[in-house]
Amino acid sequence: MMPEAVPEAPAQAASRTVFFVSDGTGITAETFGHSLLAQFEQVHFHQVRLPFIDNIEKAAEAIERINQVAKQEGRRPIIFSTLVNQQINTVVRQAQGLFLDLIQTFVEPLENELGFKSSHSIGRSHNMADSKQYQERIEAINFALSHDDGQLHEGLDIADVILVGVSRSGKTPTSLYLAMQYGIKAANYPLIPEDFERNRLPSALPPRRRKLFGLSISPERLCEVRNERRPGSKYASIENCRFEVNAAEALMRRESIQWLSSTTKSIEEIATTILQEIRIETRSF
Image (cartoon, rainbow, N blue to C red; front, side, top):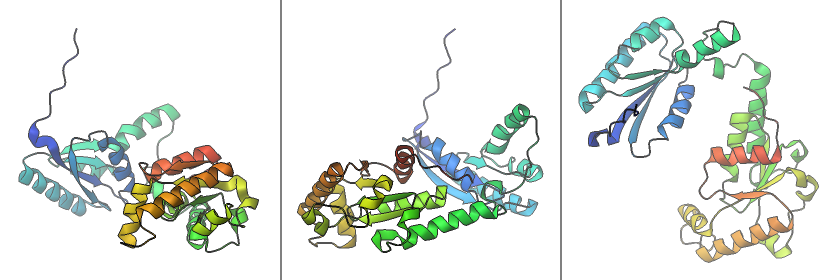
């Protein structure tokens, strides 16, 4: 028997509204939903987060908002839900949308497999009750901020990783993402023209060579990024960008520093590669 063909999406389906509904922050629903929606590049999604839907009144307001969009657009919105409270969950299910229950979909099979009932507690994935883990993450964020752009040499020995690369290659956002998401203490250090003239790393880095990881970027993209900050400057010129990128990559190769190009990669991809290559033990949250 031939498998049933999947019908082609109508032309009007090129744009859809998506609601992320949660009795907590909504971050979990949004993160998971983004992963799924990214598979449909041909569709533009207007995304709306509805956090802290933790009573019946707020649930009714959420239904009203979702139904209003359904009426205006003539298509039912998509709803990603991490509502833990069963009563509130039942209410919001009545909305005129495609309701995707992330809790029921995954928690119930886990309960059956593990032989234990889940706590059904709101906001468990972002709970601050475990003060040790929360404190580790805060410390990592403070570390990334104080060791941004090579501004502080003290404490580099306790860094999990030290990112190096030319200015505006993505070091700062990657450092903060590693800190916020994984509790990783990440410092970052710029490679500047003086380093290329000396043809060696800044003096603070060789003793911590095993912690170094390099970021590069295409000269063209670097030129665009720098022109947003300092338009028309020598710093942002394509000639200078080509010189700095080529010199930085040559220096990293000579010093045997692992590196990657951030040109077409997301922060999530960069961070995952760093964790994999340097084999940093991530914290659990």
